[in-house]
Length: 576
Image 1: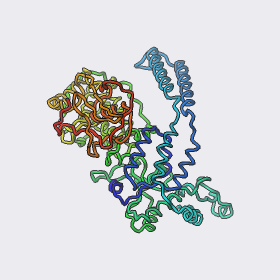
Image 2: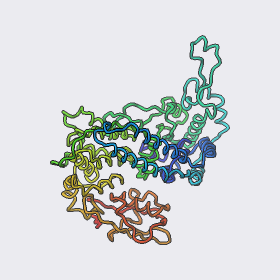
Image 3: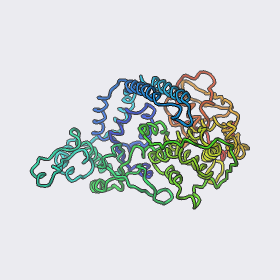
């Protein structure tokens, strides 16, 4: 897939389900999606039918405040829950809470939720902004298809294709007979199934793609879609071959085109070598990992509907207790359970954390708060490593779980400390236990820095950061566990264009950076606070530590080739 996306003879056809999603995301997520597609240049094509569907659906979108009614219902339900629950709670209900403690905690939760709802209830979708970005994109990439010829073929063949379940689109159309029996079915009038309107949309788009791919002698045909639930485009294999050559569970990320789809494509397009039908999730992850695209907002938007069943947390946990003996060495960077522990459930969950796909990683992370109770020291360190690794791929539940475990006062101090060792190890050390350029999700970075002076888990920071990285501390802008101090940023702007940013009198940017180090919004304009957030993420420090000297409420234009300096323990570049 990666090789196909890099090849100039690849043709990538964007379905309307992807384009319409721009109206259902934040402006930043929409920008990241379209920028990622634009980075692939002329390989990206928009079928005329998809442009038509996008235009028609966009005209029917509501511009009202979609959260206002939901927020009102939420506040009412929370108030009802509070009132009803307090009728039944007494001193015998909980073993770890008094009635007053429960009431106080509940009131605090209700108040916080009401305040959060109030902050967003009047948000209006920025459809005009999405149109302003999306319409030029479609115009620049739209096909010049022979629609009359395609309509004629659809009129002649569509119902026959649907009757024999020939992909794509048979899930949207066709007929079904009376299911009571063959004799009755022969006499009964066939009944229409699927969509009553736009039944042939997938087929029209497919025929457009085949015609364009044939005319342009494309060698790789890629369909990018979110319409992957009906099973009339692709199928999801249960297991796929992992990076290490071993079969692993497919969390739904990998999809393969239906065989008849691939056969038709190769029959009609003589130069075609491969056919791919990929989800927007897979595209986002490939663009992030193999093309260096900055897609964190897009990743979060694609997981906004994630519903993960969390097991109930154990009530009677261990007392915090002393931290006890901690250890960290290069062997902790190996992901191999002891033979006696290989069948323990926690190791299957840890394996799933490394699988491809946000869904399987999110489900695995949700199970960990229960499994860490009674886990061994080695397992706890692997929990920290696994959570950070999955979080760095922008899976949302591992981020939340990592922060939860760092702050979980009900978990034993020893267990928390080992998890923190694992988190720090994954952030700052490579597979051989040697210092590397660090990488960690900003939410986890903030939690690690915030708890660096916690006396209960202080030893975790000493063992991994101070003892090993202390002698080279000047190579980092800041390290967790150090005495917190604001980092003052000097932002240089000339005629609205960013010239440079210094911290501790050290330049953090360079004007002609290689593509791998260029800023995600290079060539565009961003608010200064987004620039600060990007610096915090690149240099693995909490955003709250960065303080801009002078005014801060303005936008800056990032030069097209501007990027971050090369830094890290292997560069010798001192940042302070």
